[in-house]
Image (cartoon, rainbow, N blue to C red; front, top):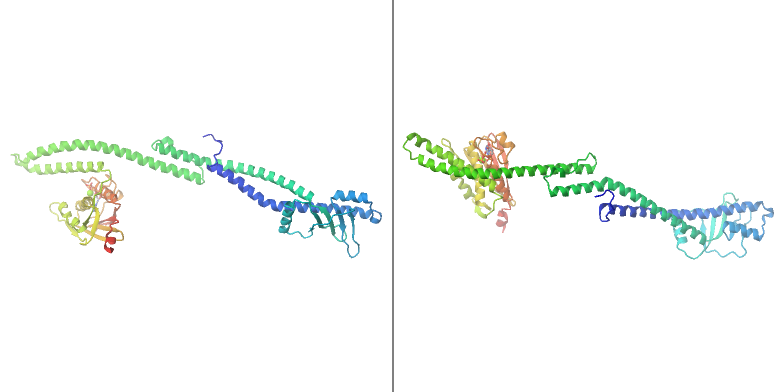
Length: 469
Ligand SMILES: Nc1ncnc2c1ncn2[C@@H]1O[C@H](COP(=O)(O)OP(=O)(O)OP(=O)(O)O)[C@@H](O)[C@H]1O
Ligand SMILES: [Mg+2]
């Protein structure tokens, strides 16, 4: 976009331009009323001063008398029908008059002008289209009584005020356009352009987030715009990183899937062959055969689990309601301690607690936690459950040695949290994924030398609502 393209009036810059012009005009209107009132006062005071000069000059004349012709010329000069000096204790009333002065319409006292009356009088003058005859009582410091009255027409005053108003309007327009233009250019340079650049860059980023060249250009501005740019750049970097990671994982997953597939076939063959080894004549071969078969079985299982994990794109839930106590009761069948050790499951789940979830998936979660406990060397696994408001909390506690630091640091991260020999590091990741698919979660409740507890949270179990009904 060219730097000085015409502003669009629905854009930020256009709106700013219109608003600035309107605000400056509004301020000008507020300033106009007092200034036109002031103009009117000055205009009238000038007339009074001119009249005062005339009176002083006349006092120098013999007998203070002038001819009618001179009087008229002097009155023309001041722009008045009559100039009157009111009497004082020592002087009599004096003045010059036209032959037939008109009757006055309004009396105006300039001696103690108030702010609001002045504005009201100015409005009166402006909005009174007919000529009125004003009786102006002014201040004349050079005269004995310090006072002087004038009888003048309002029309010339009104015309002068209208001319003044036009000048003010022109000036206001000029000021508002200049101010608006300056503010507009400044804001455009400081805010609108950077914002557009950011918006533009976001749109480009959306188009191809992995393209490094589309990142927000760095900025060393210290203000909010600079902050937005830096935060956006860092967010884009995070997203890009996550995408790269995802792409790598996807590629890895694909490779693993292919390798696994073939490996499983090879292992199946090996398993068939080792079956036959069990019937071998050699006692030595028969002795190692079961171990070999068990190892191959474990390898097949590992392949299968990895395949399942990579393939699984969010499990499909088959929700049912079932008594949790029964499900926990079945854990015994899949959890067995190695030879020489005992392992028991303590089922503390109340008989009336029901869970609403995919039974098989919850079983997988529980057996994953159970397998971990067995592998860690625990002797007892205690499963309890408590219904809370709109959720069911199941606690799985073992009396093993606690999580090793490496596992703790990468808990729930697939492949990276392995803390024991022979682990794949998938169990907890799968457990969390399955719980989250239900809208719930699995979290570590405690881990120390006395044991480890995980807490399963299943939301919206509806148990309480059902009971209340
Ligand atoms: N109850 C527990 N007691 C002690 N350590 C545990 C416990 N549960 C998990 N761990 C540690 O956390 C690590 C990660 O567990 P996870 O179940 O994710 O993977 P794994 O058991 O190593 O492999 P997999 O479950 O995929 O066969 C384990 O290797 C183990 O060191
Ligand atoms: Mg495990």
